[in-house]
Length: 255
Image (cartoon, rainbow, N blue to C red; front, side, top):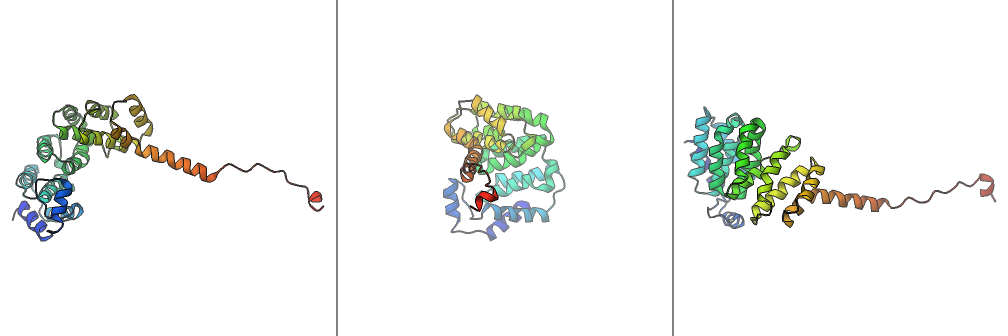
C-alpha cells in the first residue's frame, strides 16, 4: 500500500459513525467525516508517515497532493496537511512549494485547513527564506480569494519577536473594513497574538487604524483588556494603605 492507502485504512479503523455527522454539521462541510478528532487524526497520520519515509521532495509533494486531491473524507485532507507539515520533511517546505500551498489554500477554502497551513507551514517558510515568501504574501494580501488573504494575515502567528511588523501591516491593511467574517476574525487574531510580544505596537496600530470592524478590534485587544482588568482587580484587593500611626511611649501606655 502507498501512503494514501495506508492513511485511509488507519483512519477508517478509528472511525466513529456516531460522531461523524456531528463533526460535519459543526464544520459546515460538504465533504463527509469519518468521526476522527483532529488530535487523533494527527497521531494516526504521523504514525503512518513515520513508518513510510519518502525518498525526496518530489515524492513528498506527490504524496501530499495525492492525499489532498483524492480525499473522500475531511480527515483525509487533515492527513494531507499533516504530511505537508511533517517534521521529517521540513527541509523540503520551501518557496518552490508555494504553488502546492496555493492549491491547498484555494481548494480547501475553509479555516481548519487554511489556519494550519498558514500558521505552521507558510510561517516556517517565511522564517527560513523571507524574501520570496514575503513577495508572495504581499500579492496574496490583495488577492480576490479570501483564503489567500487570510493566509497572508495569519502567516506570522508563531513569529513572536521575529514578526515582520511591516509585512503584517501590509497583510492586514487591504482587508481592513472588509465585510468577510473570516478576514475580520483573522485580523483580530493576528493582532491579538502579537500583542503578547509587543503590546505597544498593537495598541498603536489599532489607534492609528479606526477602520477595523468591532470584532477585529475586540479580538485584537482581548489580551490587553484582560491584563488591564486583572491589574484593576489586584489594585482593589490590596485597598488603600492604612494611615501611619505614631507609636505611644511605654510610660504613657502604662497609664
